[in-house]
View (cartoon, rainbow, N blue to C red):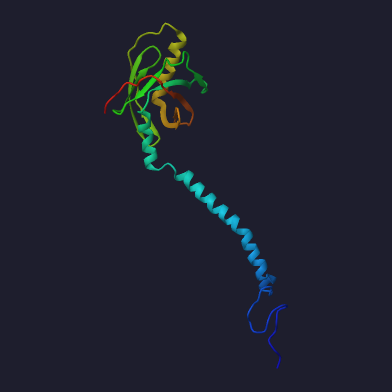
Length: 193
């Protein structure tokens, strides 16, 4: 009677030992070594997945809700507005256009030559600003009149807000930047809710 057939390097009792040849010619040592080499790749893929999830879901409601509250903590000075060609036009003289977002849902400020007010609401990073109402004083300077007109027409087009440490950016529905503000050093008008 013939004994059990052996694979090259195998043993008759069916137990495998280190270095024994397995299916496909893999050895325990080779398989273990390949798994050790793949562990960093697997860990990297898991970490990348977690990072992607954080980026996608980082706008948790608490953070988004804070965006509206953040606007009311300081006064804002306009540094640039969307010009006719869509590029950002710097405000001259600096500080001539302001915005104070009150907790009562009103934004008030100076639009260049006039005082203005408008209603606004913020949900997450979405903003809606109603048509502004101004005092109607004529500007002596044509450039200032054009700047004021552009600012007041951009306000109701606002749809999104974004913050960086000292900057508030307001975007239109097409994703283009409409208004860019810096935090103001001046005291803000305290509007109550």
